[in-house]
Amino acid sequence: MQVYKILSTMIEHKLAVVIRGESSAMAEKTAKACVDGGVKTLEVTFTVPGARGLLASLAETYEDATIGAGTVLDSETARIAILSGARFIVSPGFSEETAKLCNRYGIPYLPGCMTVNEMLHAAEFGTSVVKLFPGSNFDPSFIKNVKGPLPHINIMPTGGITLGNANDWLEAGAVMLGVGGEITKPAKTGNYGEVTTLAESFQNLAAKG
Image (cartoon, rainbow, N blue to C red; front, top):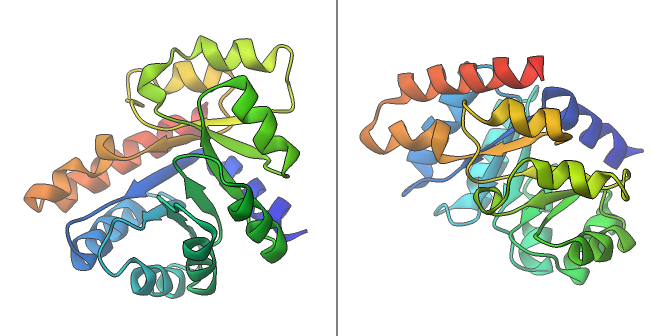
């Protein structure tokens, strides 16, 4: 089953790096820097100019990586992303129509959720992993508390994940971590080498979690 295979690969590596950029070229260089650091899962946000073309390019260039689309606000955008090569879809909130579309194409959907009710609602539409967003608003113990009564809910915290607290999230039960600026911020000044260094540090830490 395609969804299971994709999610299994993502969860195996435990880290998804959120790729943003003021231009498609900047985002592409950031993505390359992350891959050079050993990252295997990249989430290209639709806030990047030319995100559709970038998705297609990255999917073709990095066949060993799992390339997905983020900041997907509706099912129309999700379909565009999937047809452009996205292997998973991430959104800041839950959309029933996007969930249905992803199920139709056999693509994992990771919607942003903040409450148990939202997580349960997403699960009813076949969502296997939810994004706890913004993660900076929560303590890692939130995941442990949720998984007590709801062990089948798989959670990926995104936002506010640092090298200092990443292991706390993993120990609390996070199936994987979503990290953006903590890795990619140096790209804003053109320091892609530092992006690679940070990506490697996060990926190595996640692999031990």
